[in-house]
Image 1 (tube, rainbow, N blue to C red):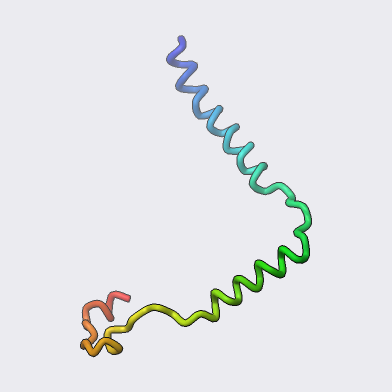
Image 2: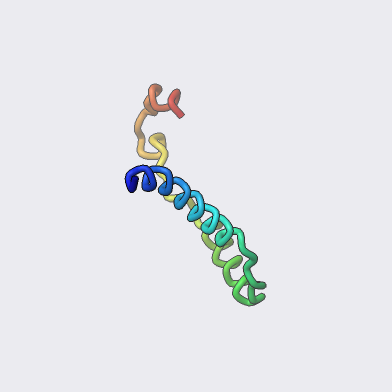
Length: 72
């Protein structure tokens, strides 16, 4: 009896937890303070404008691997 209840009850409990979690994640957030929003935007712009640290094989004087070029 209890085993049947557990097998049928577990998916129902998981479904209810999923509904509660989805409702909580989609709730309305309050308005953001203007200064906090501007500061976040400025941090974003500074991060985007930084030069990339990626080193291309040609910059190191190596020949590019044709197998890797086809994969990407």
